[in-house]
Length: 260
Image (cartoon, rainbow, N blue to C red; front, top):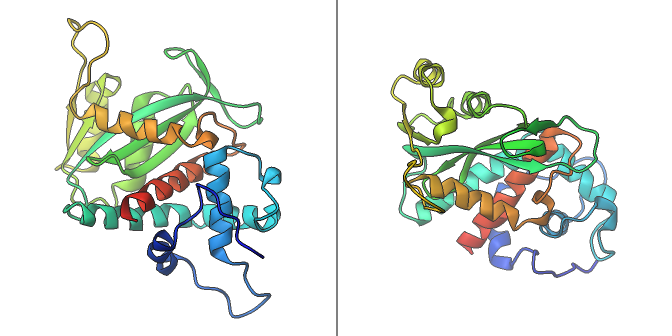
């Protein structure tokens, strides 16, 4: 099959970065479909925001592409690829592989009528889901948890930190916004990691209009990056795990473009 070429397709240089990180083919069963074509199809979906069945004929069958997406979602392969590429980007920027500081924030997005678990964010007046992101100082995703939109920032933050702090041993400073204030959250973080300090970056009541807040702008920029991927403009996923997987896939694309 001739590989379809679109703006979302992998370049040769990007493929060279990604190829060594991919699972090795099984020695049994039928020959595996070319993974580069499968990944090009998945990147086409996340960038174009189309349903699986609308994949152009130049790609492998949508059932094959979806099968890889689902298997890698179940075995956490998308998260692992994001982590491996993040370390390469940090090294390329002259940073240590593991960050010492991170920023935590959330974003509420409207959901399509997919029938999955959703909630209502009264503050944003949005019915849908909430994306809780932990990013490093470059804006690269360290961890993500997707919840119904009525989940509080503190509960979502606990879910993210509880998932990723086990391997972020060097993290010492966490910047958060006013939604995470309160002794309960700070004490919970202290109990989880005694050396991790929480610093709240608040908006001043005296400021009129828009103002870039120190450190907070980093995670806001990451949310902006995600909005350039049409699949993420709204939440189209029936399952929470798929919603999280697409965020990792979007970041894989972004980091590959940083590297090559």
